Image (cartoon, rainbow, N blue to C red; front, side, top):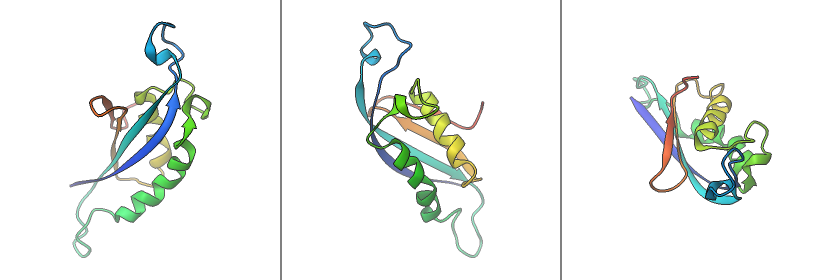
Length: 119
């Protein structure tokens, strides 16, 4: 069984390795939607995989590090593509959420990526 929580981030970024004429090479902002998925068996007594409050607690420091920030200035996100952002989030959530199954990063309503821990 999989469960998930969806979170929002407002952040600015630029993708420094793109040619200057590419619009994403300039500073721009996104209203990111992040989904954090956990996979595991149902607890027979509680009837859930994990308490959603545990996911939300693990998310708080991530949110504090990224929300209303210029992502290029966050250590490890000097080239903050959605793909690298998903990996960055995974690495920080994994210790607190061992059932972590995937991270979905939506940078717009029609574009995003899915990361499942494969490095």
